[in-house]
Length: 288
Image (cartoon, rainbow, N blue to C red; front, side, top):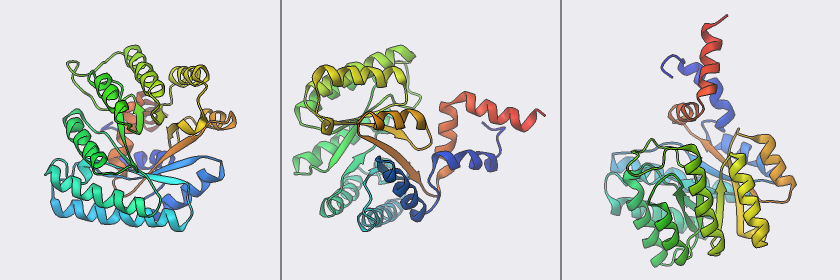
């Protein structure tokens, strides 16, 4: 990664990021909606360590919700707890998130509370459960299949009527707390998905892995699920042919649409997840 100039990463980022402005995000979501797909808008950025900056993020997110309403977009929003103060003070983070979900409720929208590295898992669940206890129903949580703890979390949250997004997980966690093998992560993903679906909870099935997509479709067929009870989710710019097939077959699908000035960190993470792409770019730069 250090060999790849930032300008080149920026060229690659155009595929995965709507742009740097809210107008860019609105434009991309309109295009996605025109293809019978839903969207999730995400303002890039995380790990803020200044309380005043968390308020600025909160006050930037709320107008995004209004833009979704004003432009009649079929889109919700995702937010990151560390962007809103989780590493500073849990109460600060809760107040910021509560302000966002309350505004979303007024506008008829939904907030997905993202899950970040394992140091934030418990704090994120605590905030989500507090919101639920206080009557918030327009917010959902994320489960990372690679964490050992996730089965116990899913079993408990299904009983609480949680709304889930299920993904593999992307952070480099210790083998002491996370599965590391590709197949064991896949196996746990499908195990968790079965618990969620059989428990009657709504789930966003967030994966680009054909093995997991096909496994999810088998569960859906076996259970005879109403298609309003689940959705598939994919990142902007990834597996476009497969996502079109999923929609063509009548399933709901949501595309994750990130935008903002913090595009570089997000883009390098995407490249690190896809070493082949990083190598291809590097080879193009240095081999003639």
